[in-house]
Image (cartoon, rainbow, N blue to C red; front, side, top):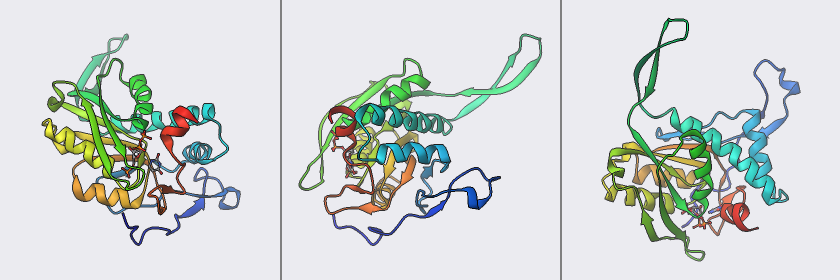
Length: 247
Ligand code: PRP
Ligand code: URA
């Protein structure tokens, strides 16, 4: 895919730290680009998130640390993703006999990971949603053409009646994630019941995804600068699956 004009455009750099701290005491760091697509929710660019992303972007970070810090970001994504599910009123009585007007989640959910890298996000989902059902879609991006190929899918039989948390840490051209959404739609899942949880996205991927499947909500930790000539995200973190599973 030819890079669009957003390729190479620097991401914003701002002083990172709590709002009450003087600017002079805040180190400057690169934060996520803002995007115009209304279906995209970018995690708040807190010092903690920027620290975690700095760790996993570092080429010298070893696998054990890469897994540990990725898992922490994944947990933030899952927690934020759950905020986008519908709730209904639910009142409970506390041990001192007083009512508390709260809410509870409505509806059933499931996770669907885009193998292989997306499987790394299953544990974070399970930590928040005990015994959640998880489907798998094996899509592989061709190393020469960057085009996605679907090899396999195994999904919960009642998936059309569930909210789907679609899991993949990298959104580069967007081809793999779009293909995964098409698989879910072919099983009867409406677009607006899919939440795509993602660590790092490119502006090109965000644009393609929003054009093809505009009702899918994207929860991402960071929108990066662009894509290189091999359609790797820049600055990115390299090949997520290799760094999490094999390197
Ligand atoms: C990576 C990544 C996404 C895809 C993103 O997977 O996990 O699925 O590439 O690229 P795209 O947006 O251009 O489609 P890859 O196919 O390399 O397989 P892996 O999970 O085994 O690393
Ligand atoms: N897949 C990855 O793991 N990283 C990229 O930058 C692009 C696709």
